[in-house]
Length: 171
Image (tube, rainbow, N blue to C red; front, side):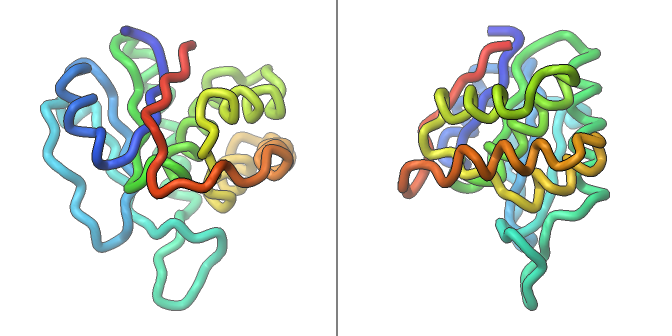
C-alpha cells in the first residue's frame, strides 16, 4: 500500500507502523500522554498533544490553531514525499484521528466538496465522530468558510464504540 490514509487507535498503531515502515504518522494524544516509540523515521512523525474536547474547558488542553497549522504542513509534506500511507491515530481511533484524516483529505483535495469528503469518511469509518474543534480550527486556516464544520455536523455522531476499527481510506 502506498497512498492511503489509515485511521486507527493506539492499540493498532504498533502493528500498522511495523507493517508500513515508510508511513508518515500523525498522532493525537492527551496532553499528559506519551507518544509511543515506533519504527518510523522521526521526520515522518507528527506528535500533537491535547485533550479530545470540543471547546476550551478548565483543566483540559484543547487543540490549537498552531497545532492544526502543523498538521496541515505535515500533510503537505507527506503529499510531496510521495511514499507510504499517512497513519492518523489517537487513543481510540474515533475522534481526533478521524478529524485528522478529514482535515488531511481537505488539504489534499482543495477543490473537492467538503460534504462529499465527510460522507466518504462516514462510509469507511462508521464510528467516526471527528473532533469539532480540530475541524473548526482547520476550516479557518484552510479558508473553507465553515464548510468543513457544516459537513462534519451533517454526518453527525458515529456509531457508539469503545474503539474504532482500522479504516483505510484510499486516495
